[in-house]
Amino acid sequence: MKNINIPTKNKNYWPNKLALIAFAVLLTISSFLTYRIYKIEYSKEVLQVKEKTSDVRNQLESMINNSLNVVKIITFITENNFDETEFEKISKSLLEKNDYINATQLVKNYTIYKTYPLEGNEKTIGYNINADSLKKNSLFEDIKKEKIFFEGPIKLVQGGEGVIGRQPIFKGNKFWGFSAVIIKTDNFLKKIKLNNSGSGELFEYQIVQKHTDLRGAKFFKNSTNFNEGIVNKTYLPSGDWYLYVKLKNPQYINKALEFFISSIFLSLIIAIYLRKLSQDPIKLEELIKKKTQDLENLNHQLELRAKELSEVNKELEHFAYVISHDLQEPLRMITGFLTKIEKKYNDVLDDKGKQYIFFAVDGAKRMKKIILDILEFSKAGKYTEEKELIDLNEVVEEIKGFYTNSYPNGLLTYEKLPVIKSYKSPVFQVFQNLIGNAFKYSKPNEIPFIRVKVIEITNDNVTIAITDNGIGIEQEYLDKIFVIFQRLENDIHIKGTGIGLAIVKKIVERLGGTIWVKSVKNVGSTFYFTLPIK
Image (tube, rainbow, N blue to C red; front, side):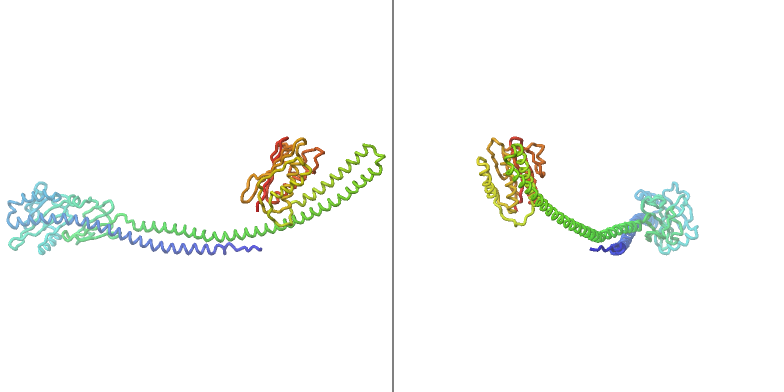
């Protein structure tokens, strides 16, 4: 399969496009929400200023209303000619109840002729309030309207600054003068809970006369610009004043900007995350393609390797067959000629010569047996037959009959062996070799006793043990006995080539099992092996 290399630019096109679209959409939503937050926060702060303005106005109007009552009472006693006898007494009572009012006055025509308390206000007696031309016009307007009015902040004759509230007095429908209250600026501000600077924790304040507005005299000594920012302006008719209230540090822009910046970062993070998510399938697809290609290459290599191994196996099988066939022919010749020499020259040969010929013939026979075993080892694990159900009890019973004549006193027992599905010939060969070895390596002066039993059986495998009371194996050789040509007993009376256990191990492992041994020298051995049940 040919690899297709997609350019990086094309691979990243869709993730980048998705990220940009997501960022644009989120930014649009964030802008809309920012605008909404801006409007909401602005409205909240405007409402906050209005509420504060209303609060201050209520305090001012409460103070003015109380002052009005004082002025009206003084006006009443004057109109009823009680001013000469009751002014000081009533004024004292009124000032005790309204502690923010500093003094009361009676103005006859335009001249102050009574003040309470007199102490500290002596300069006011005889002062003509009509001396100021601007004030004169205002006084005439208020006389015409016959209403109470407040003037201030103004400099007081007795010193300091304050607010003066006056009401025209008429006797017999003829202008007589004014009744007045004086509230010093400090008391005025204290009553409305403000200081001289007109600056609170959150707000700036200013009170000015309507006709001069912010261009004229101001109650508070500050330079705040009340023409910008969040400002609320309200009119107080009783004093002909404008009250300004301004929020010192508006936060609506900062809050909206803070949200907008946060939303930009959040939008950016989400866009990057979406880009990564959209890249993952592309990367996964590339990885799958690469792994698929790697697997195809590996499969191709394995196929080549399997083909090579198959060819090597065939060559080895052919080599084993040729070697075994070619070696057997000269061995037959050696055996045949030695036998003929023994027969022809039997009378000439002494015992020594006859023994040499016997050893030579026996060696040739052993060589032939080794060749045949090598051929059998090369074929072990290769089956052309089909799997079938095998009753292991029948297998052992059949093998038992083979050794009845050779070991008539030997004992071979078995119990409750299972039925397995496998290849009959190799399974039979495993049991025959292991049981045969148990008889072969038994003690010379002791009756052989071999026992076949099931150690464990599961859904997949059965573990079988074949135990004997033979000569046993030393511990240091337990790992070597399954190696080809390893014979640990050199007794010439025990026949064998040392290939049998190697063949057994190869068969068991090809069937999918394992084999191992436990043994004690001169006590006996137990061979354990597992076989698949299915």
